Image (cartoon, rainbow, N blue to C red; front, top):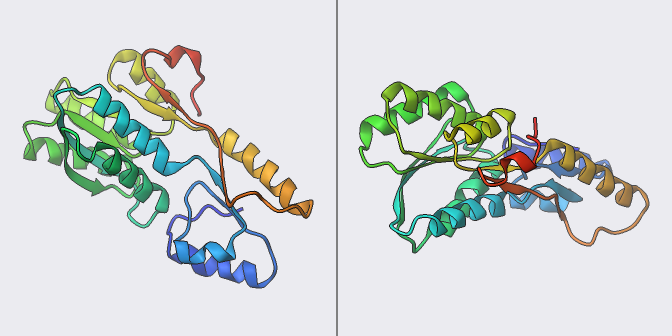
Length: 223
């Protein structure tokens, strides 16, 4: 079971195990596509579709459009590149304009600094899209410090703090995708591999749910 943090470096690691005849299941963040032949499966949420669903939600709930900024995670990570691509594809052709994207390397303090920079550079931000709840928490610190109100903050992961902030009205939406569900999907996939059966497809996605004020009390946070 391998969770790569760098998509290109992960290829060489997977090749090493593949050459020894050891099946590799990628979890959560995939490797670069040229390494797919060395892997048996991917387990985790569909990173692209989670981001695409967020973008669609914003398009539907923003009849007048708006200006968005994005705080992304690690620049070398497939999961964060997909969380950007899915969002951009969903808002393409709409009245939502993505002003800028910056990578925080998944550090909350970096996210806070990036948000502070956005606030000093743009006076007309309507939407803040964060590639994880951890980054959203950093962005909120900068927004509160600047005394700015009315920004729509959306993110991914389903952390307890994000659920709390949804109830307080500081975060509009997060995506609940649990490490527990991913672990169960891995066990299921591993059992298929060890039984000698062929997987129907490489991507073994687990479910996710968009969480807003309307359904926040119906679900438990991921962690």
